[in-house]
Image (cartoon, rainbow, N blue to C red; front, side, top):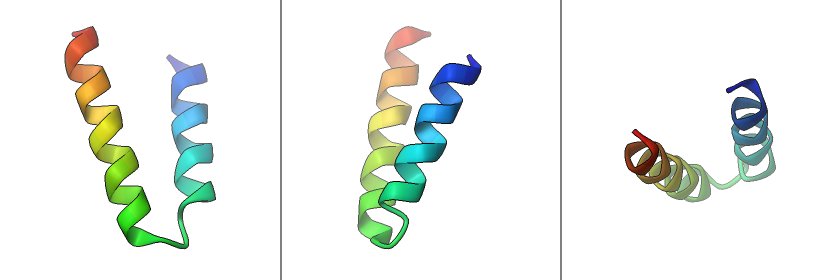
Length: 37
């Protein structure tokens, strides 16, 4: 799903300054992907 990947990349960039924010985003994405699968 390239659209989702692009969105994730943009999110990572927007919160890239804050390492904690990246961890939170990745955690949310992981939970979302687990629910989808």
